[in-house]
Image 1 (tube, one colour):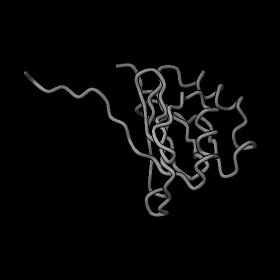
Image 2: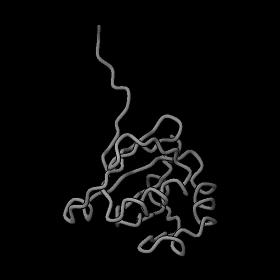
Image 3: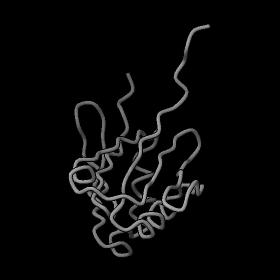
Length: 122
């Protein structure tokens, strides 16, 4: 029998665990508490772990790419949530067009940089 990858789930840290948990719930991720210091956040077929752990070099260099099928609609949803006003440290940048597609950037409350993009159709 041949092996087949099923999923990949990165582990993300947080400066303030409770604020980060609230942030990801606000984005629409379902939270599943695994341990007092770790949760799984998921939506449909993707997921990641959030930990109550902070190492500056790790967090400051963490980037995640989330591919969307309708970037403009998702950007509007995120924009309408007004996350920078609700969560200190959150930064939302507008959609930019690139040669491979388009994306926008969202920094979570800990500074983790999310690249949220949509590839051009081939």
